[in-house]
Amino acid sequence: VSSPAWDADGRHIIAQRRTVDGEAMLWQYRVTDGVGLALTDAEAHPHAGEPWSDGEHLWFSSRVEPYRDDGDPVAGLWQVWRMALDERSTRLVLSGTGSAARPTISPDGTLMAFISRDRDQTVLELMELASGRRRVLSTGLSLDAMEGLARRGVYPAMDWTDDGRAIVLWTGGKLWQL
Image 1 (cartoon, rainbow, N blue to C red):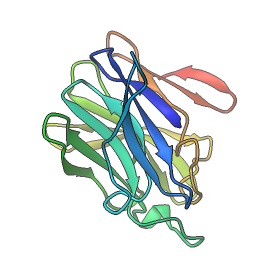
Image 2: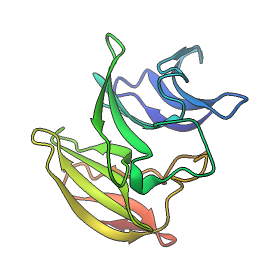
Image 3: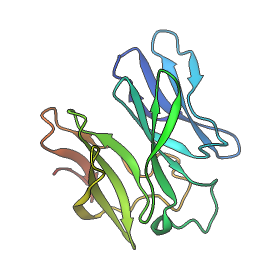
């Protein structure tokens, strides 16, 4: 089990659980007794991970295909999905050139920070959720793990400050606030 994230209700932890053949699924575990429930399946999302939850929705990244040595992040290997937790329905939020991974939603729910790729550089982008408009916040981050199995996630976890004015993330061996 890796990439744990608290659900907004404080009663559950959502984490990535890897199968023996390398596929990964997201599971929701009750804090009281550790009983788990599979949220994603390996057929629809062969490598689901990096969960973030606001209590109503689960946001996560997923590889478009099972692991292969020739995966190309610039061509759109990773996507961001949103699941309605009450009915377990999923919807594609972001895909395409440069990929998209490690979704992190702002405290007011209007912005999504995520990692993408521009040729050989890892990029931090913001997307306005209402309009879908994207903008680059920072370039030249430490290299992500999009080509590989991303056993511990595509990129280290990041989070917004409580006031939603900045993002704290790791790059270059340090924590930064942007």
